[in-house]
Length: 195
Image 1 (tube, rainbow, N blue to C red):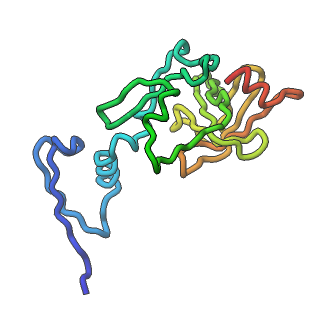
Image 2 (tube, rainbow, N blue to C red):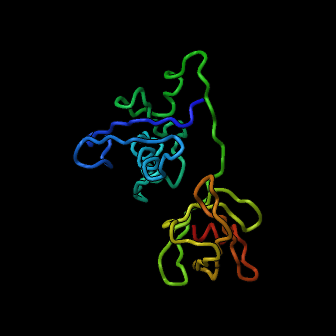
Image 3 (cartoon, one colour):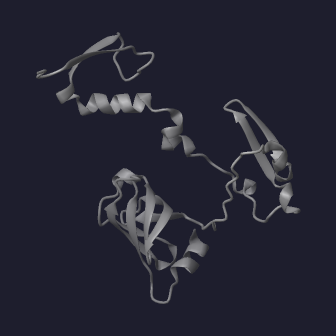
């Protein structure tokens, strides 16, 4: 029976920038695969689409449609044929891009103003992105900067609303947040005004 199995891995700096200046060899035991190397490999081998940071971008307010296009089918449509080939079209041209057997998925979800800005009790600015309502006034949210938010941290928002970090969600890396509203304030009305 094989008691332990050793692996010799070779990495070069060009492919794996977390390695030192010279090409390196790492003898690894499967039973002692260190967290540092595992994390470095995971980050280096991660394809760009899996990195959440690649989806952060600034969108100027003037580019966000405030009213539907008239006529509705004159709204813009981006057709992507490959990672390097795309065309700007209009929605009324969609049928020319569909072929028999294509699946067309319609999204009729309601958009809410889910991005909120507040301050910690220390005065540090924070940003919340509400993902899912779990209970009345309790949400799963992404918090930025997330590492600085421990359980019990309180956040102050305009309108006298406060929130408390209840727990961390390991699946999303987000936080479960409970909103504490002043008497007579509706969460949804406040969200429409502040989000």
